[in-house]
Length: 279
Image 1 (cartoon, helix red, strand yellow):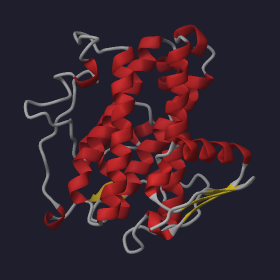
Image 2 (tube, one colour):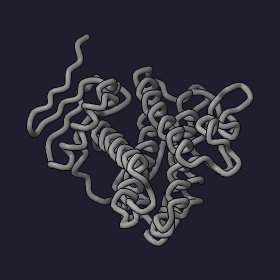
Image 3 (cartoon, one colour):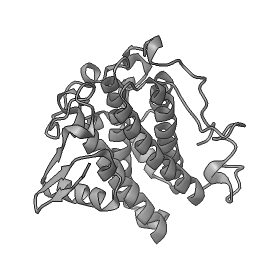
Image 4 (cartoon, helix red, strand yellow):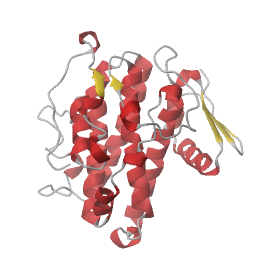
């Protein structure tokens, strides 16, 4: 099947998940978002039966408590949770790049890395918002605890530690959720997302290894790979509780209490939580 990206002056059409992962498409995506251009996802991007494509990019800020409920018995519910994490990641990296101390804390190569991280997470956020359409979660950025965020932004170490945490949550959450996805096309997309998040995590650990980690092996340290060579994984409730523990979202608006229904036995089975103590 032929896949194509149509990138005119003010329009971008994405016809397959593969196109999202191409650097040229990601750059076009970010450029058009900044210019207010139109972005459309073809129905083939998500399964018509399990994900509803649609334009949700103009969504306002609905009540956080009412909008952040996750029914994990469906692929839609799982990707709603992923969308929430992508919103927080995009907001965090946007704040990092805009930080007055950005050039002081990081050298040119590191600044390029963080700028790339910001751009990719914006793509992920808007891709999911568009694909989920009316079922996209509300804008959660208004619930970010600015005091906590400013504390993180106050030091190089704080930024790197939070960045590693976010990327490892992305990896572990998708690893834990994969077995519950019911449509193979959605599993393929989740696999593409998690591979990107894993490369982000490796790059960040290369820049600043966690305490006690060798700079030569930190990208895949023993704290994130088990004896069988398997990567970290977390069930959805644990992922949300890790987010809540950061205090980055006010009033515990994002936590395990947001899960209305757990996955059913026919979707898969829970796995033991495995997460690095210091990502």
